[in-house]
Length: 269
Image (cartoon, rainbow, N blue to C red; front, side, top):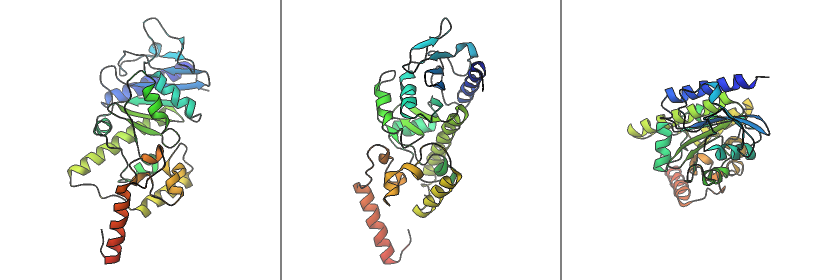
């Protein structure tokens, strides 16, 4: 079993990575790791994630109350958001919050990452919805995020940033990298005339590959109610299935009618 000091060093290393990659600026972002059901390590507030050392890291309980913190340090003001993830997702062992430029730009523009453009992104993330805006350090963000926790392992925060969570610190960080890479590819492909999306059949084959691999976490391949019922998956509902599992909106109807007309005419998209 890895001791607490080693975990603190790992948190500092991940902090340096997100800082050096421009995923946070100044004192932005926060990281946490679950030790057990009642103890969690987290980054302090008001400190650059690129310059932390182990003595900076705080320990809190499941309610965010301080168990241990060195003088001059106190837990991140966003600890409520982390604690909600752990409460709703017992399988999660680490949470990473950052402000990656491209992913945050999509969050600011109100555009979820739902277009299936790359096999790796489809398998690793499925899609990434946007939780509605909440005031930082309040319960508004945890409440907004909560509705997506049973369906996804990554969420964009409206006008704020991105949140990823997984069964280890490294995997939670890797998901943040994947979200940003996905957003960057989608942004650049839009500049080049628009992405050529994978077909419904291609997406389903990738879903099946994920199921065969037995990958952990929440993903449309396993928990998208619409997909299980044979309806449009998260990739065509704008990520709404995570909150209300209803994808039959006007845009979907129009798209389906268009597809059928094209098929009847013997044309290709």
